[in-house]
Length: 142
Image (cartoon, rainbow, N blue to C red; front, side):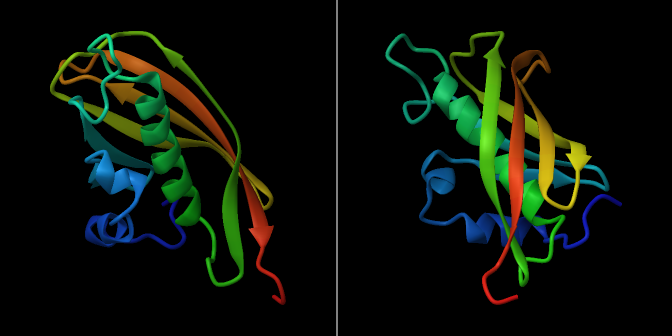
């Protein structure tokens, strides 16, 4: 199993209250031994002025999943993760419904992690593909 410090989906959701994650309606939906998924509505909160899913909302979903996944692979008492780089390719427009993001590890090292995130529409078509690099840093005094 990839996760060294897994959390139940309910705990992940509770940790997201009163953040951009909850404000955009993102909900964690599935976790298995090697991936984590969450869905996000395509509505007034996440659409851009032309009526399609805002690319920034897709990136927020991707970074949320990658950051959460990284945090479940480290001991949070001694370390923490911060984003170093994210890139995304937006390949399909979505106007309504939900999109679901799924994160999988590309590299989980002691000082860096690289995560791949696919965002798909309700017909399972690729909407966005992103790659997130995280730095793993020691907590002060540890």
